[in-house]
Length: 293
Length: 293
Image 1 (spheres, chains in turn yellow, brown):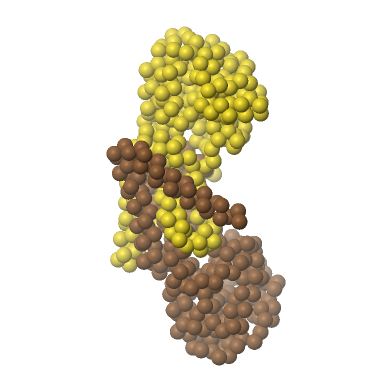
Image 2 (image 1 turned 180 degrees about the horizontal axis):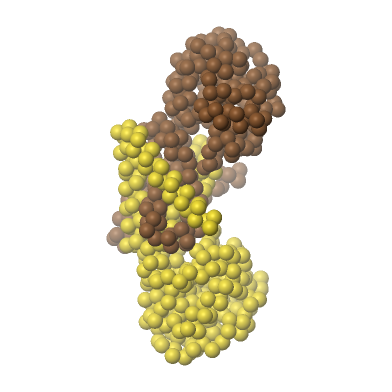
């Protein structure tokens, strides 16, 4: 296999997808690398990014990636999986493809199918915001976040070192995981919170459409629990449908808890309600304690 | 009917239940009234509150309320409903009973059963924290919050004015509602968020007990969506069981959304997933817009 044979500092990077994650990546890396360009489907986004100095050059044509030594895919995960195969004939031998997709199994599979002269590492930064678009890009977004890295059949020693250097440079902490394990965990701590938030917002919104008092009285509890429901539906549909087996299992677990509580309420089984709610409180506390370490 | 015939500034207040809400109420009111005492079942809490100057006197004996012109009930809602009838023979004619309970129907019912010489207004401040206890008491807790006030058959013009003065003094905004409407709305914007948060924490916690990677990767999305699960299970069981009809209806609505998403995932119905998630995003946005007004 060809080795990249270059350091991050000497690399030209092309970021594909100038949304919140790609834009923040560009801001966090731009002073640390030889050059940054971007590909985005929206010409207006390309123009704005160049004008604001986020990247030196931007185009809606994926061929712009040909001159890069590192390509970072930050498009919605269904799109980026397509782009992996589209990039294969475009890139120079030894180029590293790295991605920020929220589901890793199908990405690793697509990377495994790349020709041997293209190198690839799959990644997932455990951070984000419920808002989208390059307008919300923030150089500090990745600071202190965990960043999952998954090896692929196209991960050379040097490719791994380069991906790790990107993670270090943007201030995140890398965590090595296999893609199946990542997707299982992400279903529970990322996709399920989103779904619970969306179901809440949806049900409250239905009632709010005929009763203005709901939004008048909704306060910090509703605000925090419904925050994730503001996420982009297309992005989230991509993620959920590519991780559907794990997501359905996580949903079934949460639905069973709701069903248990609903039945205990129906039967006025106060002990059962208390017990079920205590399990939830203990879980939240165990997470809180883990954060203090 | 006897009228209270006194202003808030000239009143002696007895707060029953020195937890987060009662303690915060004492801190917010203590420089604005003639005197504040407290009743709490826990002698150590009583001693600490007097030593820290939160109240001038405290006891585990409800008879301490006899000398007050205003009694504010801040105990868990099942307890405070009992205390309403226990207080009836203890209090001076014209005393105002006011409460902070999260469910209003059963409280108003208990207040309606008071003798005519006791006055009563039911209240619910739309604020709180997921932590409990007087140690977290905060004079600013009520600042800017909506504060629901419900009339009862024991609400005189002066009793209403006094309850409104308390709300104004602590920096909250009063909202008049009938108790049935309050309980319907609270089920959707307060009790349902808690239940979704608890179901999430419970399901993630179950997996985390055998896989430490869950808590390593859980980030801001999990943090915010699971925050309410940290609430006291006894307090929440009280609330949920006293509002069970509304709570079960709200849960059924949210469970139907989850079920719809689960089936759409199973049938790979991408359009349906996107559509359902868009409804949720629009609901969250409509709440956000309501907050800007």
